Length: 99
Image (cartoon, rainbow, N blue to C red; front, side, top):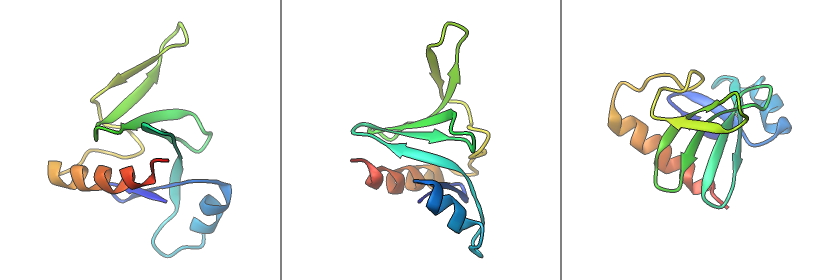
């Protein structure tokens, strides 16, 4: 499980379902870890953000031509961080999930 700004992302359906009964809160989406990136997905498993191996947390938007556009905007499921240091620490912790 990955936590970004207090919002949890589950690795699979079982982890997501178990979070429903957790006192720490319910997951807001899923994540998929690859060799160099972590894709952040919403509950319908649509990509909404990416964490790169370089520690960049980026908003992902699908263009009309089917390609993805990545920007430094705030991801709606994650929200805006109050401090850069909190964002840095969350991303650093999430990067330990890379394959």
